[in-house]
Image (cartoon, rainbow, N blue to C red; front, side, top):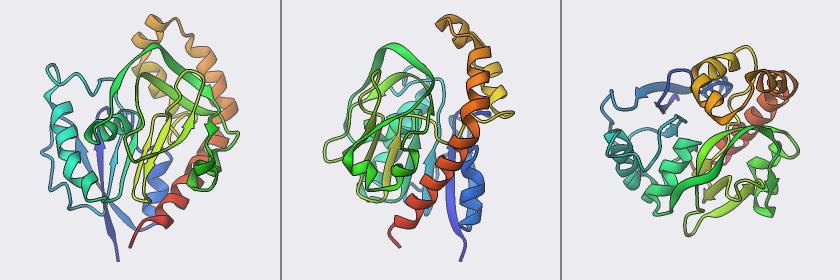
Length: 232
């Protein structure tokens, strides 16, 4: 029987990426909602919710009211432990909805680098990412919510992933993106941010060519493993 996955997107080119094929293979019917435009449905209705990334922040509710609306919308879903996956901004929204602090980092973390996995991560779905450079693209970070397991970190950001039981997973990094040619949309779309950060897009493009295929395989393996562990 087909299941419903609600995909909450904040920016057109920050989409499901390589995760889309996995969800379709697992018989999920994908329903997309555009943040700030489409009304948010019943928070408990979808079998799975995926909250994607974007360039605005959890604490930008005054300028972007959808941030406050999404955080509050997530509260009852997370409290009910309904399957929810957050990526980058999506993970920050989950953390905030769970009462954790989200704040700006001293400097942005943009580029490909491997994760340092915790023991809890090595025993779960994130083990597929061991030693694989993943895509980082964020200027804010979350603290691990109370009661959640910290799964990974980097030198720049000690809390890169958290899980609360088998159904809630927040990922600060991007395991769904970073492969050419689709990654070129990120470089073009975030050109101003890259220039402000002093990052040469040519180096990111080169790294995407080197690491993108392995990241796609590892990211898809991670997602399949997580979906298999979801409660029936």
